[in-house]
Length: 161
Image (cartoon, rainbow, N blue to C red; front, side, top):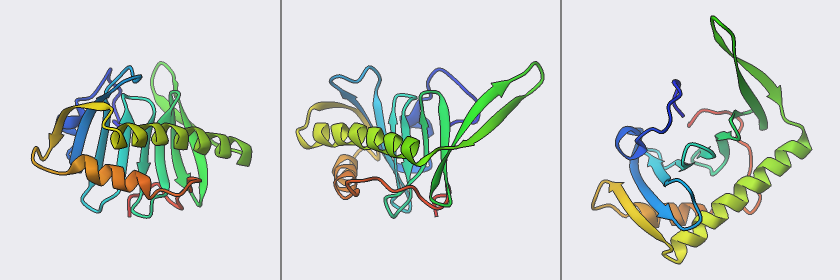
């Protein structure tokens, strides 16, 4: 998730922290879906610019961006960060989600990820590109998604490690 806002990043070219990445066109998705794995094997999924889900190596949600809000994991809880702009600065307003809000967010996230997994498993997509070009990125991402717990877990920290 970029620090500076833009209409759309070229994630396939610019998301170099994702050492393996692919961009897909999936039926029913209005924007390309970019999936990628970091060097440590943690997964990031970008449904266009929103929503975005980032996981740690244990398969726990560590960061997200959805409906214009940033989310981060903190001590196993989800915190939303809303940008507020004034004439001279941009600040982030922090709010801890309730248990019900967290559950609803995780259910919606899992549903979206299940749809992606189904598209990968049925080959219901067009590959727009991948890095490295000869890699097995989609097989690794599909396997990663298939091993996620049925109910997503919030990480202790937003950090990768």
